[in-house]
Image (cartoon, rainbow, N blue to C red; front, side, top):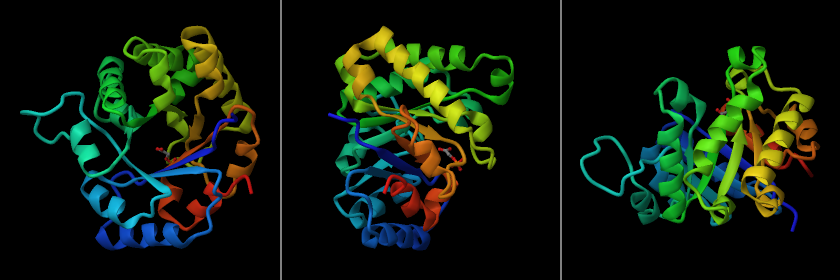
Length: 249
Ligand code: PGA
């Protein structure tokens, strides 16, 4: 079974009732590559609206989830609450949460575990900062981020995880990784999956690229052997998102 191409749209803290309705209606009526899995991720308060409006082919993801089932955790949302509104995916470990909100590897790993154990699909984000890349630490950093999650999951649970490689220096900057840079890290992640998890996880886990993906650069990136899709920020708010979903047509 080849890996199904996967395109996620991360709206981040953008949108209003009106604009999200318009984005979702646009996707509902667009001609999307049926062989690509599409998952959109609006801000938490628009999750019910998005899930109700989006057709059943579109997946919906939270941008974050907490690792505890319920209780006194002001401002947080649980796995069961997401499932209660038929949201079956969540992002975990986005660099904006790692860098701005200081989420650490272990906390992120616990969230991945809670989400996977609760039956959600997880878009698990990893990636190095510019400083780390310039110090030749890219592979070391992504390996550290991956190892933290590997400690929490069984080998089989990786089937619920999509790994999003998002170099921090490429996010929202217009500075996309070259196809060679993306492929090099994706291949290293696949090798890590083989060695640390299993041959099966290495063959089946989707590794998607994120960071300034646009309708202009997606086709070349999609041709790389280990690029199984994209996590799209800014461009997911625009009609160009359809072109990115259809980058292999
Ligand atoms: P960007 O964001 O496409 O706006 O660079 C990607 C992301 O943060 O997931």
